[in-house]
Figure 1 (cartoon, rainbow, N blue to C red):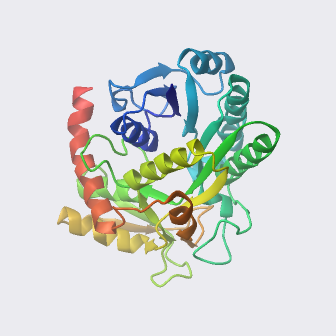
Figure 2: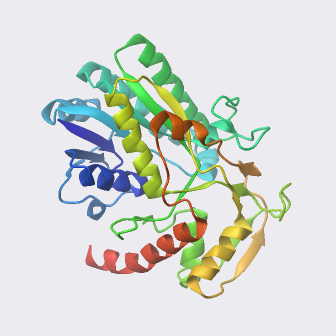
Length: 330
């Protein structure tokens, strides 16, 4: 039996593939390679190039590979882009996921782990924000993910499908062994962009908004190491295999850092300076977003081991340096 990882050639998905392979699992990756990379999928995993919205491809794959669980990462993730292209986001993140869920039900797959987001909370009244906080997304990205959570809830009540929806806060860092990392050239993740600026790959870094109601005026986020996040997915899979029912959980550390604090950490790691330009706010950015993180630790017996900003930044920077060689060899 195998585990299907959709979007497994992308940033978070590739780390999940490594986590599963390290645990001795049989892994199948479904990715259309629109943003992922063929070289990011290890030889030990089976790569199927295709789209999660293609029901025929998915149904054949579930049957041929004897898939017993789906870990679903495939989708679009850039908040400002979603505001410019809402229909594209509802197609990629909602419509295609509905097709995937239907294939799971028809194919007898009983376990489903979903890559959700803290963007479902919008601008929460309180931080840290708990799982029971009102869902009030302020971007099509957040709304598209919320809709999928609702589909999973309703499908789980009507069919033999248990799920864990993991609401990510800000994912950062890279595999400590240097096997994978954030590789999209035009990615908007702060730590990646700052690392590129530190290495001279970008002329400058822009800070969007310095007038937020935070101590230094810049946005505050809860940064979770991508490897800790992959291990949370493994814990979620063990939870479902144990028959312990569906869950919705935050994925974060419960501590936030401002944009300027992150920039300082990157400069420390790089032992150098780079230009920082102050710019206007972007639409869809809440001032603060920090996870209430107790529930995931209790429900999944999950204990992060890389919850340190300097560690996250140092490994992201190391990957950025290595990525030059990876691209040259691919």
